[in-house]
Every structure is written in structure tokens, then in C-alpha cells.
Length: 330
Ligand code: DGY
Image 1 (cartoon, rainbow, N blue to C red):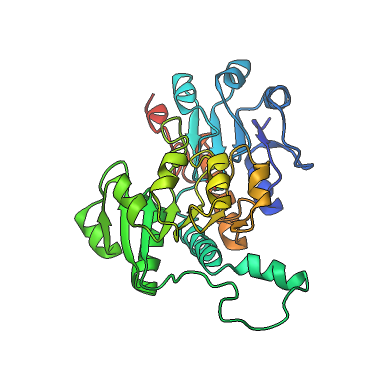
Image 2 (image 1 turned 120 degrees about the vertical axis):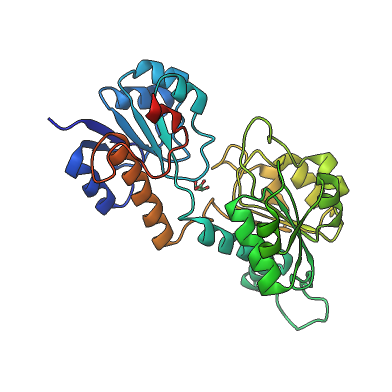
């Protein structure tokens, strides 16, 4: 009998077929988001789970399912997983870094440009039939080329955004991160390390790309927004909760900053109602990595991790991208 795994959200059928080769697979084909009780129940008897960011694996879920051995997250971010709880119980966690870096950086740039150049705001105006004539100041925004790009969080995606800004658009790139990146990468990205207040004060366009954790919760709130230029834009493609959305809505309404582009939200898919009331914000539904090729690559990498993590396939026992590799050594 094959070991049983749960695919907790709908995913590409060809990836499910790969899993069926090794496992008895239960798929959440309706793609309903399970509440905790449902997740606990669906995991009964399963040794592995193919998860996404909406599938929360915590100590309670683990204790109710001591047979669980591998959690393969189809996302680079893993704030949905209690990794220490998994490690303590010998459960391997994996994620999907690298394969989404360039697509996500492309989207970050697209969102920043749409925000600075007021693309959606002006389209809504046109669709409402309000456009009657060309005017010198109709939807004037701010330039991307030659401006200062500030990056909060300089991991792989932050670096890919820095390269686009510096080499493609002649931007001056500054960044803040928990730790400085190497001189070689700084040189390649033409990026300069600054402290957080300098980043906030000097950025024309602030891009948030840091991971979410208790420590990064509300890293940008009312106090930080007050330090930014009134002409600045803020783009968040990282995780909801890093920005205080209520404070941001207030700052946008008061034109304390010029505009924001948000792909992620606190408590998504809910969006803070005040953000829906302001026109100077571009809102997208967590799609930064959403190209067909990238989502397929993410799903296949998560499947590779699940297969290898459970001791099958050519990489048996050596999943490509473990989060807590110490479990493999236990
Ligand atoms: C990620 O990979 O973390 C993206 O945000 C998709 O969830």
C-alpha cells in the first residue's frame, strides 16, 4: 500500500499525477480553505502534506497527527508553518525559493510603476467615462528612472529588484536588511546599505520584500510612514502584516505619501475597508509569483520536496529545498 498524502489546496493536475505515482493522494479539489478542525481531520493517516500559504500547520495540528513527516509548502514564504514546532516533532518543512525570484521581481516592478504612474487610477477614470480632454496635469505621477529605490529586505527577490532598478532604470538603490549583503552582491546590484530611518527618508519608491514574522509585524506603521517623503510611493509584495494597513490607509487619505501598491494584506483575502476607499492605491490579489511557468515550477519543486522528503524518487532523503534540514540529520 502506498503512503497517504494530502494536497491541501487545488494544484496543477500534472503535479498531482506525479504525486500519485508514489502516494495515495487526497486532493482538496473543491479548493475550499479548511478550518483547523477540517485540516486536522483531513490529515489523519497522512504522512505528508502539500501546502500553500493558506494552510496553517501549528503544534495543535501536528499533535493531532503524529504520523505526519513532511510539510511541503508551495511558497517561498513560510509564515504559515510553525517551523520550531515541526522541528521539535521531527517533521521536515520545505519551501520553494529561487524558482519564483525573477517573476516576483518583475511583478514588484510592475506594481511600483503602476503606482508611481497612476495606471489603475487613470484607467478607472477612463472607464467611468470621465475623460473629456488632454490636460497638462492629468494623472501626473512620479518618475521611476533616475529616482531613489529603497528596498526593505535584501534577500533574493530584493536583489533581483535592485538589479532591475539600477541597471534597467538608472535608479539609485539603497537598502536596509537584518544584515548587510556581501560587497560583491552590493556592487552587482549597485546597492548601498543604509539604516532604516535613512531608507524611509530618502526613498522615492519604497519596496517591501522582507519575510513576515513576529519581529517584522508592523515594521512600517504610522511612525515610519511619517518619515517618508510626501511624494514617495510604497509597494508591498512580501506579506500582509509587515505594513500596518490601517495606518497606511490613513496616510494615503491624508496624502502623507503619494501612493501605494499592495499585493498582500493583513488578514487576506480580506482587505482593510479604508484601503478600498482611497484612490491612490493599486490593489492586487497576491499574484506576484503568478505566471504559468513560475507557478508550475513552484508546484513541481514542492512535489520534488514531498517525494524526496518521504524517501522516494531519485533524490530520496535529499529534498532540494528544506527549511529545517536538521530534521534530516536526526
Ligand atoms: C510566496 O511564495 O511566498 C508567495 O507569496 C506565494 O505565496
